[in-house]
Length: 299
Image 1 (spheres, rainbow, N blue to C red):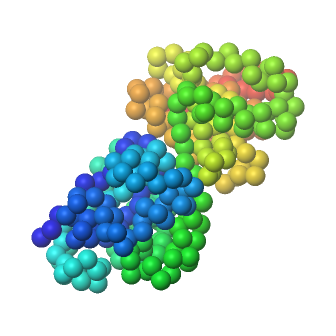
Image 2: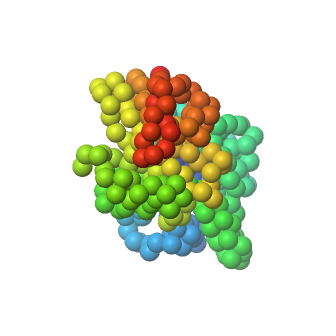
Image 3: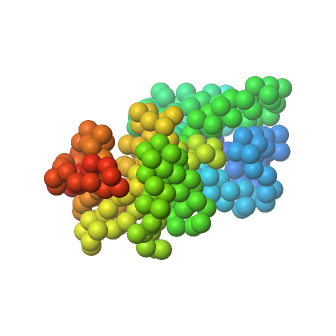
């Protein structure tokens, strides 16, 4: 039997695009979507609104920079030619290690065969699965429909970035200004006094290029993480965006050996944190003129 390509992903990967198996040309080149008739790269980079770097290695890196990974449903297979309906034998890839070592929340099936097997085998019960028209040459007569499908799916996806680079901090500050200064009327000099050390890191979730949620990643002590300046864009509240970002932060904290999460919660947000397993750990106090409590969670 033929063997497919190794997966492309890292610990920050949130979206996994799955085909059925590499084409004959892709196997010869040892490159994903190596058949010139397959317009995968053109479709994806057009949808992401970025230029195609042409170099295969740079293409892969650009996908990883957008938190997108690649693999196929079948690990080993027998097939005549490259068409999906010509599989005669196949074995599935084992996705457990990948899921344990990444942040994958979304699966995009590239074509009907991949989607059918994903759903029939229940390969991703905890992830959101989308189906898009295959990027193979067989569908090049439906280019506009196919491009629209991929763009609609990719536009739904929320990606989260972590770090202290200027662009991440700028996005976090932009959203904090919208929420804390304009909505809650906190004075800018109070909101941005940044008791933050220069070493502070930030999580920022984006929908396309728009920041929609952010949280600062600070430490309280060697065992305790201290999330701070947590906010979600007004139009995306009560849609699970904030809960998902908080879980992402907690997962990172666990991996780094922290045992507790301690944060300051405004009174109107207490119920939200309780639903996420936090408990009240102080009496009420005022912060920036707003009534708050300390809340804690065992990680």
